[in-house]
Amino acid sequence: MTGGRNTKPELTNDRARREWQWLYREVGETVARATIAALPGNRRPYPLNIARTLDVELPPEEKLPPLFVPTDESVMNAALAQARQALHGR
Image (tube, rainbow, N blue to C red):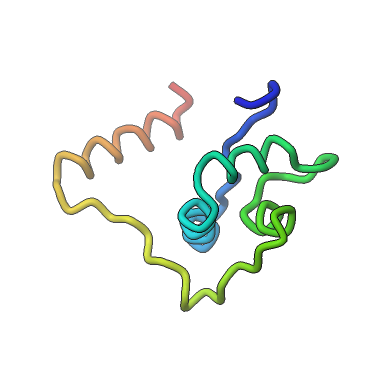
């Protein structure tokens, strides 16, 4: 957290996840998370709002990177377990 404000992006779908992945690579983690913490007013930390605040234009959907998908089964199982845990609030 930066300045007591959440620094996690709000990722509501696969495109948002891909946009965040692109932003993260383009400007770096420190800048991306600091921008979330500094979003003006009650703006939600969607990738588009982060990009606008940074005065960066997101690429068209077809130029966004593919989502990272682990090929190691143990990594996938761990990620699924973590997602299930988050969904069930435990």
